[in-house]
Length: 67
Image (cartoon, rainbow, N blue to C red; front, side):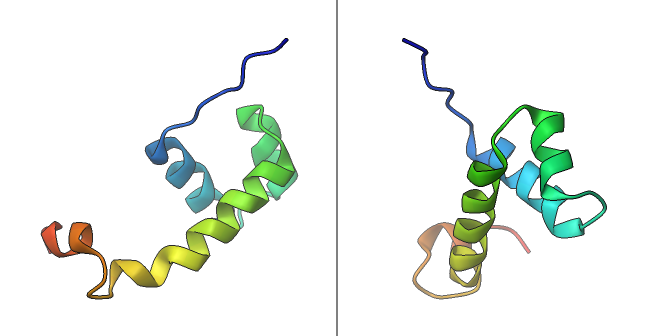
């Protein structure tokens, strides 16, 4: 049985930002990092869904970030 890969938040962010730049297709980027295009699309959706939390008061972590 194959062991599941675990990806860091930093890695996911890096790859999703690359997708958002739209310099390559999702499939090209997924192939580059050897991950599923479906997984990459899920990461992108989750990233965009939670992006507003960075600027909201709900996020204590966001308040600690230097400007």
